[in-house]
Length: 166
View 1: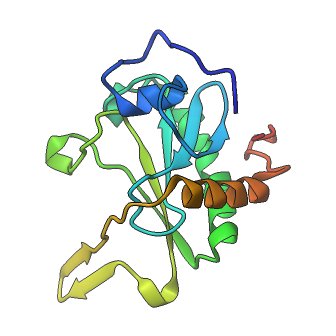
View 2 (view 1 turned 180 degrees about the vertical axis):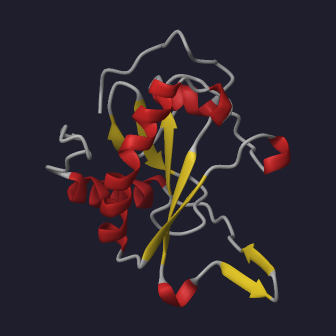
């Protein structure tokens, strides 16, 4: 996926902005003019994808409505491709916003996490519900392989509005 370069709405100290600009490696799953989806380098599950606006926006409340729509419009198609590529029974879509919300990279991102029935991250004790994930580093080769597999399931995919996603 090419055509990247320095964007006005980027920050040189942001790792995600550097990935968008092609200055840091990323295993790309999907890219258009406003959105980039790539593999998480410390996935909590095999196939863990991050979806970001290309413009640097720290949290969800920093997005204009059109930017939010561009990102959110890609999610159903990406989730379907991810589930097919990994054989997942479900896909969790998470976004941690703000330091108090657990955000550690301050460029808005959505986590797409494949879930298999026999490895649910949900723990319930009475009224307490927790999600239990453990990050594990992954090699670039492994990330590239699963990104290719997901892209294969995106081939010919259309957004809900009918536009091609690739």
